[in-house]
Image (cartoon, rainbow, N blue to C red; front, side):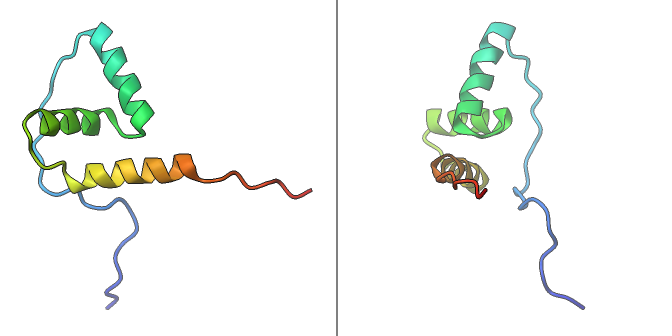
Length: 81
């Protein structure tokens, strides 16, 4: 039996879905800000809630932010031709 981990996303731990209705004009702003950070909108909302209440930012969100930052700072390699 193999002990290697399965491919796929890293587990995010136990979470509770909380459906919210965001006014359309505000949704566009939040979606744009999440995209600029390179994270999903749900993660952005959890990030804002954690910051607003001086709570720890969940590690999966920190990981998403780090991956997005790494992607933005990668140098573009010249095309061979």
